[in-house]
Length: 555
Image (cartoon, rainbow, N blue to C red):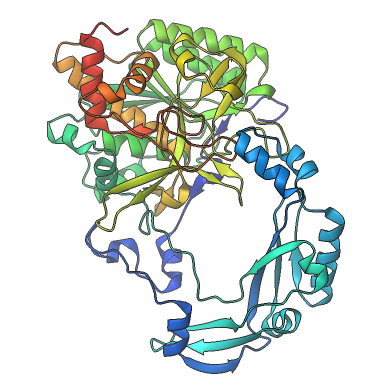
């Protein structure tokens, strides 16, 4: 959000348009050319020592070989840092830099040394890594190692350093280690295969398939979406539906525009992502998109009209702004409209953002994203999902990537008190204020979803992908509740917190409790936490629990 008061699509830096042609750059076949999902998972490659043993040695790597070194910086006051970590207290990035960050004078000396040695060097305040790219012979000289070139039997080449590096005193004073001395060790994704999660993957991972197999497809349900980037045609959506054998979008989709709502941005991919994910979960649900300009004033108008029209009982929203920087006028207006939505029985799922606990930036204090911090909405955080060797759901971690400062939004509001449904989960760091998220789902772009945008197959993530997943699942649950003569979900949080608090007593656990990882500010833990809320869904168990909740008089 800028000074002019603008919303942002939370997909932001989380869209990974991993084009299939680019995906083939490593020599691996594209996703479509691989075995069907779950049937063939690549085995781990040989160790470096094993690769060297079976490779042809070509001699010292020459100046034409570039090495990409990363020097991990030591923290100051390590004992104090460990005590802080053990206490569970968090600090802002600025506070961390002041108390524990590397000595900037030592870093500057290390940078100067690396530059004089012939490397292109990058470091910025707050970073824990010095990057240094340069010719292999320079690395050999600097670190006292032989960097040798090899060729495998398949014709692939790689380089590797023999022996342990010996860092000069200037580097050793600030760096605890160095990586990048071989290009054989490549990180592998043990989470999701190239191309992202297919609709079949999503249905299986979150146990949505039993609902679909029982005949639930979203029929009779309508999901409404406030959006700020345009959807000029249905080409991408049609390709997506055809690729995954889903019903066409055209009979289900309505686009709402009005001159008083301003002009939406050119297509950014957010609207496409939201619609494609909902459609793969609830392929018969109707979809109504309200397109507005990205400023608060125009967006409030469209949102008000959306609630007034009440064309659907589920809202999926992937928009937000830094809460402390959101004008009170907009907050109050939006909150009043949302109160009306709750009174009308609408379920409202909102993405919490993709910058972890630091929605306002890593140089600012931890903060949430408005409107996900409203107590009257269901805030959706993010996870990284891991699959088993059989291609099925294995586990999830809280999504938090410190290198690029991304992660599922979570933390506390600055303005809204903790609601009654959340008081039993009050965290000491919450200071009596509203805590987010309430729930979570896969959001890490590295383990994201298969989409089509701009005519090309790709992979996307972000909490703006997790949110429509939840919205689509609630459409199936609403359909089932309606079939059984029960009221629909409405405001979801009281039921979700009842389920979380009573999970051990329910026949099936409705949540995958995420207990590992963090969102750059808050750690995942057993039960509720401010990294993933109650966790992600087991949709079939969630549906059964909702029936018990309503039949028991809940809400």
